[in-house]
Image (cartoon, rainbow, N blue to C red; front, side, top):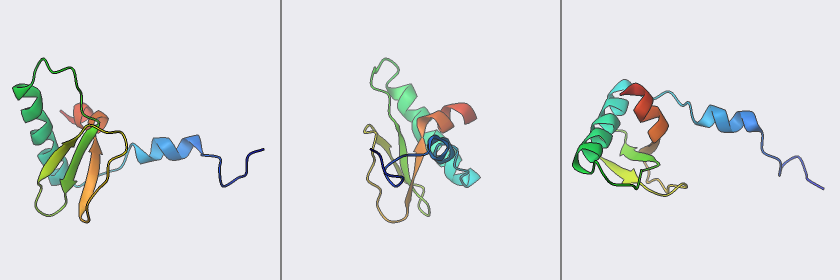
Length: 85
């Protein structure tokens, strides 16, 4: 038996992956990702995304599927970065 609160709506997951971000924030995340790809072209480990601070635009590559974000940070998934590049 599954309760309504336990069931996940598949539409919710697709909505979360298409979050519209500030263009400047997205460009900063793309720059970080592009630098990583240029410095590690043969690295088999692909990041899940980038945790980036909204005001300072400093970011960290995230290699775990459930990132822990600090206050003021947002997560930009790799899928969104590759589409925009």
